[in-house]
Image (tube, rainbow, N blue to C red; front, side, top):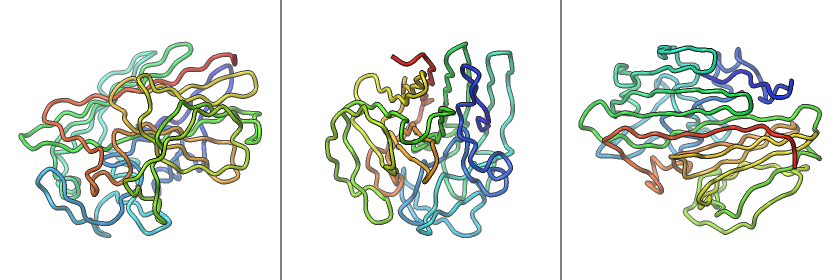
Length: 277
């Protein structure tokens, strides 16, 4: 359940990075991967949430470590536990019973089922994730996606990024939010040589984030459930990750912006392609 290709106007719009083989072998993100049960980094190997204290370790199945030595991108990279429920020309539905795997529950002791519903039209892709608790135990919600987008033929110096006014999360030396924010103005400017790896909140009533160039615009819209945004540019690539997140980085440890649910929780984003205005 990773988005491996997305074409619009005859162009591949997903950054392929290391591709599917690298994703399966070592969790190297590409395309449109799900980050669950946490998005991006944790600030350490222990957390307390919803009545449980959890310690992660080298033996934790699916655990990935980033450049600072911290856990990153959750536990489901290249998971084989997905079961396809429905396939048509325009839709794909699959589910994963997290609570049926004792190893996963040891690292995230909150039984639940995930469902992904992917729908496509001639000009848009819509992805809905539903998290359904399967016991009386409340489930913390901190998942997200890491879509890599590109507009072929448009180099980084001419790739336009358009965003609304938002609050930027200030980070420590390990890229973990400090709890402080600063308001940033709307943006409509080329990415150029700027390196981005920053989180945002206060995204507005109808959050939408656009990259443009070569006569086309690709817009990521948060339709429901997503409260935070991460923007990331891999070094020296004309690729932009526009990441929908249900909580800020490290929310399982900090508790900041962390929601816990006992009923089904749904989050939806859409990707639109249009002619540039």
